[in-house]
View 1 (spheres, rainbow, N blue to C red):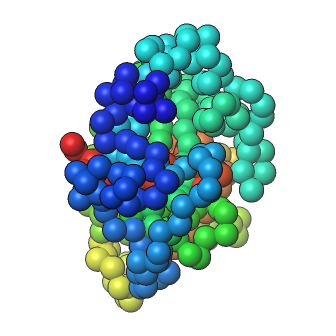
View 2: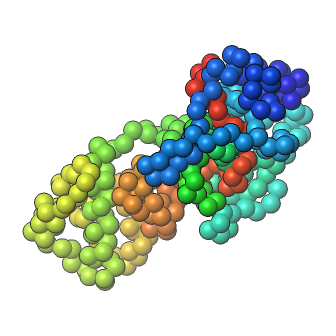
View 3: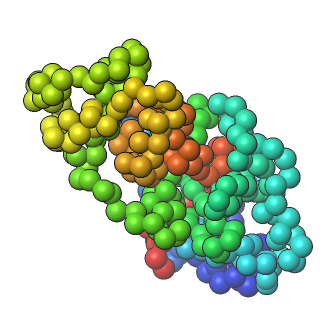
Length: 318
């Protein structure tokens, strides 16, 4: 790997050591390692590092920038480490794919990477390395842009779902970068408090009208009473809440129309963050969340343990 892949691609901060020990890793790389933590809510545990006996899909000591060089080589035809035919095959769907929640039409399985279709196709993969790191990769095949996110966290409460905190945080970042790559303005349209309050208003408006089949909106007095009397632990914007309630109407096709409202008012990357903060992360993948938000729930790979040991995060810029 060092001779045929790392050196030709200039991946000077990447090794496949038997263990992260001075006998197997240059001192300069050891000094740049981050400390990995296994986590539970409010608990951070620096557990002992584990090392697999073989190197199937992990155990590399690397940096995000080094890993990005490898993915860029694949997206740019494979040179100087792969033939163009093999590089193309690696980003070509080999089988239909899905998650533990069921099949996904836009998701396929390639060689190493998952392959995502749609208007802006991309490849992605991610996973964890016990007991302290998560890794997320996304590469847009037509734009030739790669995003790699490494974090020093391994969630002990995860049972194999891609909604685990380390990957959820990475997907939030990925959706912001995705908007930027494709020419959209990724900056939030509202302040964080206003965005949360507006989304809460949309949810309340939905429950007071479309869910009950009530054609008339709640009165302004009722909405004001709810907005002003709310007991909240996060910053709150009463006016944004009232606006959110007012956006919801009973129509002939309420689900489709509400989804269109959400897409128009809250871009996918913004909705994903707000929904998680309000405790309704499933809204992002629910049909009412709209197709524009669904990508936020389908980031890097679904297979844990398939990541690089992203323990070089501290030296990510070197």
